[in-house]
Structures are given as structure tokens and as C-alpha cells.
Image (cartoon, rainbow, N blue to C red; front, side, top):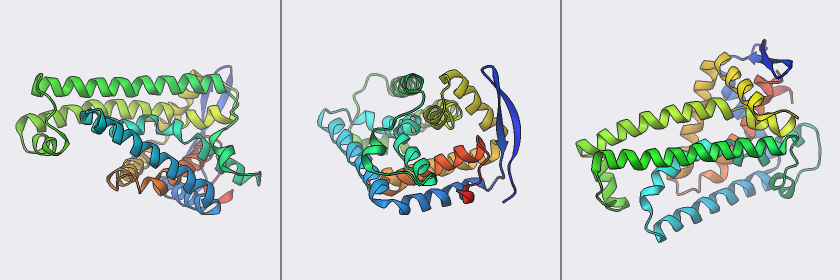
Length: 268
């Protein structure tokens, strides 16, 4: 893989370099993430298992409270807040590269360099998730009026085999896609950046957007991989998330190191 070249991007009062990587870089990030996962499986898989269990409990709660209609929007919105939920995996990969002590406790309780700014970014991502859920509700009302949600099983027929359902799917996907692309660009590198650097959230988000713009094709591939692997984790009743979530988390750290710091995935 050719070495990345750097492009300067203004950040606060300093100058930050964003590195342009090769189109096949996402596969190298996944490979590095896979190595990290199996270097400390007791931490990575436990992290993934915990996330899968929480997802299962949340899903059960939605059915128990007769809120099944929230399931699909929340499953899609998972990718909006995913970068925040994987901070412990970034920290594990960082510690692996430095031969520092590693444990599940250290992954779950990470000491970040910019905790207040990271919390601000997390709150912003949660607001985007709530906005996406609200848009999903309004889109349903636009096509089906005030009719009650028919139930999860009947909704499959309603969404995929009626004109109203297909219209709702098209409009909802377009609206969700716009939000997802914006959030992805803002958070892709901002979250790990705030974890390890003392800086403000706005500067981190600007640097993240600039990095995504400078690496448009690799980031499109990376976004596609995230969607596919997250979908696999969800449709397997969250069992797949035990592996796919930590894999994506570790790989995201290597993506950050490659694009922001210019460190090749195979050199750590």
C-alpha cells in the first residue's frame, strides 16, 4: 500500500494535517482491527457481548411496551451513535500499540483527554438520533395517517408490498441517508480525536469533515462496510454484533491513525 500524503487543514490556531489514503485502505483497517480483536479476545468479545445484550434488552423493552414501530428507526439510527459507543475499543487498540495494560475495566471506563468536549459531541449525536426517530414517525404519518402500527410481522407486508409502504421507504431512506452521511462525516474521526487530544469539539468535527472530503472514495467504502457489518450483526438477532461491533471499533481506531496521524495500519 502506498504511503499516505498529507493535506493541511486549519484547526483552531494551529495547522493540522489530513492524510490522503489509497482507495483500498478500509480493507487494511479491517485487517488491523481483526488482529487487535484476536490479540485480546477476552476484552473485545466481552465488549461485543455486552453491547449485544444491551441491544437485546432494549429490543425486548420496545416489544413489551408495545413500541415495536420504534425498532426499525432505532436499528437504523444505531450507526449515528456507534462511534461514541466504541470509545473503549479505540482505547484498547491504542493500548495494544503501546504495550500498555489492557482490561475490560479500562475499556469501559476510559480516561479521555477532552471529556467535556466528547460529552458535548455525544449529546449532539443523541440529538441527531432523536431527530431521525422523529422524522421516521412523521414519514409514517405522511403515508399512513394516524392509523396504529399494525405489528412487526404485518409491517413487513405493509412496507414492502404496498404503494404507500414503498413511498415511505423511499422518502425515509432519503431523509435518513442525508442525516447518516452528515453524522458520519462529523463523527468518523472526531470521536477518537477527542479521546486522545486536548481540543474543542467544533475543531474536531471540522477536521473530521475535512478528512472525509479528502478521502471520499475510501470513506464511501468504509461507510458501506460499516452498514453491511452492522446489518449482519442486527439480522442475526444481535449475535453477530459480538464480533462485528468490536471488529469495527478496532478498525475505526486504525482508520483514525492512518488518516489523521499518517500511521500505516500494518506498522503498529
